[in-house]
Image (cartoon, rainbow, N blue to C red; front, side, top):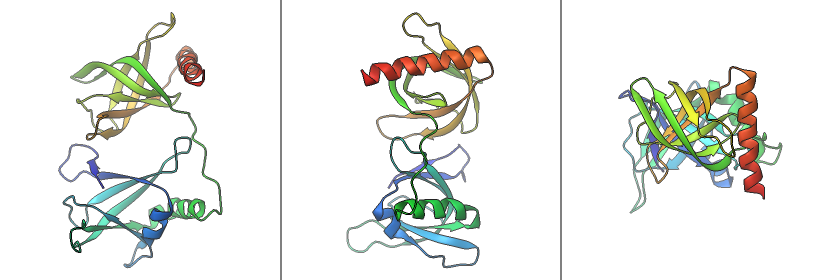
Length: 220
């Protein structure tokens, strides 16, 4: 498992992305200390310290909203043989509702919530700016809610950015305000996700046309 730091502070939270499946359900266990509601055990070779904050992002699939659980490192269990150590993450009462939802879906007691905005794979030119940081690069997915921007320059989570998306088929460049929602610092797709802040009706209409055009190309 790979942990990705959220923000640049030395004690910033780490993000762990997991698939919500039967294996996850098997690794979810009961609380073992006051104030906890559950514990999760996952194999992980990275160095962590008890008390470190871990944001666990659970994915049910491409058309279903992710769930975030705010946890803390409770312990690290040494490896047996050549396997990795086991990271024990404790969830407190603030995560009760999300955990009940996850366990209900995995147990077949309820259906997962459909994603509010369909993410469309794209290859769109984008220029973004955040303070002194700016870059001309590409967006790799797009929805009416936001986009994923390829970039080795990464503004901090919750930072305000300005993005300009290249138009297609005669459409002008779309300029939008946005907020950084997450960053990805490892793997082949290094970059960050943004949530759009749509302020005017013309912006909303142009964004809708852009997303619809790319969706039509994808579905053709």
